[in-house]
Length: 455
Length: 99
Image (cartoon, rainbow over all chains, first blue to last red):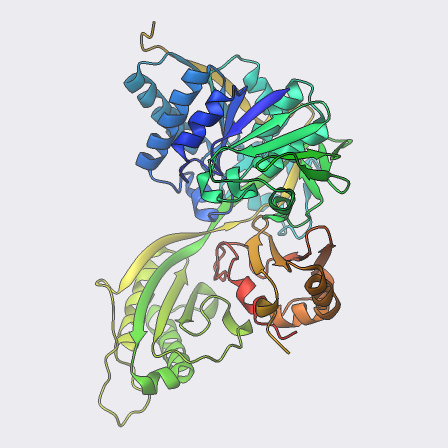
């Protein structure tokens, strides 16, 4: 029997404090929380930083460190700092030391790192140890140096190594969302399929229940299955809410690939055991022949500047396609002429907010808006060039007339400067797995003792 | 003829990692689920999204009355041409399909 408390879907999303206290009172064996994923976009991994504010992260992490001390069980976070790169792990380790000092806590911290050395990744690629997953981008050995950060996703094996240090707090770099939850139940010989299945159900906290914002859930694992219970007073888990979570952000709702094998929930059975809790049994864990971990990498593909113009004149709203098409043609030829650039060296895109900015050309909905936001996006190979092109685009968006005869019109700019520097634009470039001889080969584990004189 | 969104409980779209998109159609009642599965073909969905039908993965999940469609993202999440970082916007265009 192993009880895992999951306080929320991610550190930074907040959790119900009363529900957390209730979970601690239930006598958990571990507190496990996720710190991120790729879902916030490639910039965080590219820059190796968190998407959440330091202050929010600190307040929520402090609450969990207090809960850990009260329960006297390990606290584990996976994918620290949104992306799980080493710099993001270091950021959370610093916050942890700061909190420990403020609370006067003595803590032993295990730090598991997931960032990859590009030379080693290139060697592994050359040795055919890296293979693409379905619809992976093309990759060649020369591409690998272009990545700002590459991380490998740790699984249960690496989290178990960290647990075995006897640490109070485990701060892990990139891990699978499930590994931090599944590790202790598997270490304690609970049913392996149930451990992974319960971990997948619990990865987003109370998203598998009603009142998903409340965050906190408790998963009780044993030798046959698991029981999931949301901890907020007004939250309920039902067989429908629990089983439906297998759909969430999952391309296949029955099969989930993890380091060392895959989870198959085709034959899982979900039943209500009371008004609040759901019992689940029947998932299978299928070990793989080779031990592989997934890789993620983010690289810079250009530098961007954005200009927003708001068009409220009904005649211009009606002829917005012609207006933006004119501006695109005029501005493109002026950029080529004045900056001596070829078409391949820059890109100008004008997206129409109020028309089809979300979906582009596939959106055939013809509902007419009274105004259109024109979002001009300039991409070039350097930041300086993007700014130059933005300044050439600026007067067109401010004054371009549909006809030569009319008085020069002026459109609304909501910002000064009108051309806003976005900086580097990143792209995820790896959807590959790395084969390892030993699970720790691509990861490092260090233990940090923090002494603040607690009795 | 009615729009799909008016017949079902919810249409949701999300990233399934940076390279895949997944669309969940929660039909609620069994009769609606059957109707949606019968009438909403992969070719119709592929046409609306302007993608290759061969790349669509279809899951008819009777226990939940859910039709799930997964497909490679038309643009990699967050790359230069991607318009919707989290992929939630595709649900609208599926919900507006006539059925």
